[in-house]
Length: 88
Image 1 (cartoon, one colour):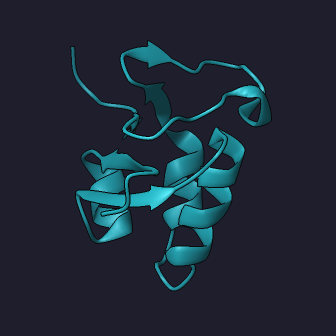
Image 2 (cartoon, rainbow, N blue to C red):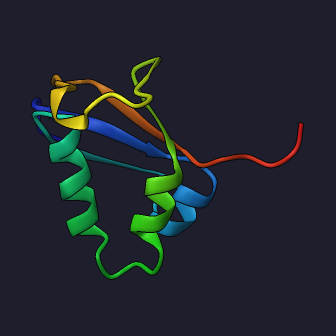
Image 3 (cartoon, one colour):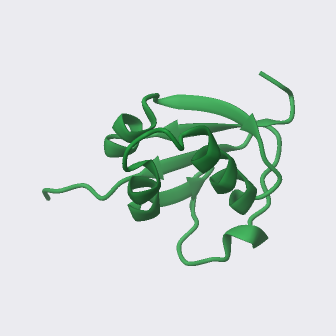
């Protein structure tokens, strides 16, 4: 792990699509991170589709509809990808 890395957590279907529950990588913005994980998992069926359907949290803050390029990431940040869950 590099001191400038962020930690990415994939939950449920996102974990299955990525083939891993967690990875660490450098990223300056959420847009950069999304580009990098798409590149890293280009060989995984449905990865981009599953990630596109996920809610994203940076730390404990939901990203919502904000422009991903404007969301700065800092060393040690955690980014979580939560797919829609069925049930109630």
